[in-house]
Structures are given as C-alpha cells and as structure tokens.
Length: 102
Image (cartoon, rainbow, N blue to C red):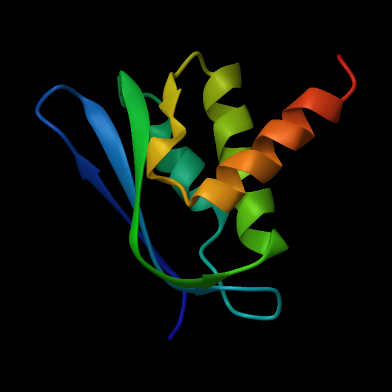
C-alpha cells in the first residue's frame, strides 16, 4: 500500500495530519515541502497526527515526522505528537535529546 498524507482542518484551527499506507525506505512518499506549503500563511494554531491507517513504517517515517515537527517549531506552531506511534515518539525524543543546540 503506498504512503499517503492527508490533512483536515479542525474547527479550532488545528490541522490533523493523517498518515496511511507504508512509510518505508524505498517507497514513494509525499514530500515535506508540499505540506510545508499548506502550512505557510494558513493561521494554523497547532497540528496533531492520526496514524490509525499507517500500515508499516521505518526510519524514513521518523525522519519525515521529526522534520515536520522541527518545521512547525520554527514557525511557532504547537505540535501534539500523541497520535504518532509510540515507537516513533520515543525515537524522536531521542533525536531531540541528543541533537546539538544551534
């Protein structure tokens, strides 16, 4: 199953990012730049994740998710990561903990 990404704007101006399919190295996945374009100037008050339809994932999904979260932080957009798989949240926490400060 190919990787897909959809977004839904909630009534409170939170953006739900819905991941589905197989997010694995070598698979065709949506680009972060297309999602970043949707966020630019959108007055989004936060983002949250819905991974209920995510079939498989590997490090490429962790990289995509952490890059999206970093982009949101840089733009001042709060991120609720609870909708990500627990393993992804743990790996991102490790990345953030061990990343050098700019």
